[in-house]
Image (cartoon, rainbow, N blue to C red; front, top):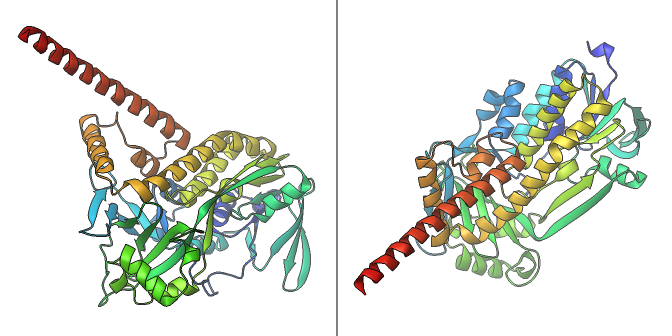
Length: 443
């Protein structure tokens, strides 16, 4: 069947690109998968760039469709809630679901990428070219130019799909060609990784939770790894006092962590070295339009709509893109000039919805999770879910434990809040009327 169809080029052999190659090969397409890096299965991992993933239902749904879910979940660690670490006092656990048994899953980005890459490479009709950096693209002809260790090479494909991340070279080529507009909204925050190693061969913290150290204008999180370590990520301002730029000397680093993260210090023997030598990454939201040009070139995943990581939905959203594109190809009988515009129509509002929710969740994780008011609201929300099963569902559960479209999640949550507000207002009115009547009788 692959010989009957023209080759599709997928630029970017990261998570979305490898999954996309698997889906396309399953449809009978020959696929050329181009990656600017060497084969990650044999290369060295860049220091401070592991970025654990929180794999949830949307990502798992995509993996089930190609039979990879069980293999991937072998090394996953389920996290059933948040563990909040105050400056003083004991950590407090907050369940993600009303039942307490639903979990998001901590998984290594590298391990997942390698599993998807190996699965793609094993499929008939898939060829993978590493060390190929895209430096030219004609969107009308599908001709691509790559820089390789052997010099520049040219390739052509009937359709070119950019799955090459937030800094997408495909998107950059379309921008240079004048057929696309983009906006890049960066936060005044960056991220840096630290490590908590095992203690006596065991986890130093509870591995069944995503750990958060909320500190108002900054925070740290930690996710468990199969080797019983934790990968910590600092999300701090890039400038000003108490920012990445303000800490230089080992003494200043130790003093800052002892003051603001006192329970971390004894658990992280390489704290100062990690802080001084691991890079600071940028955080931002990418928007662009259109996501496709004449049915010949398309974008998906972070290449089309990168988001900040605070809902743990970046990879899950990209995987859902692949599922939706596959569905559009079904509905359009593999007519790409129809499928790619339909894909953008179906996904763009959802991408914008999760982008907004991720930014809002940053404020929640950084500022609110330690607040008694927030904790009371969560208890009320769980009580409503128990009282109204299936009718009232929290935003977190709809995002993480369902495949309800993100835009529908936002609309449903607004309706739920409005209904609860109306009920609360009615109850207060009845209470006020009762108090008024009682006072009248006393007169």
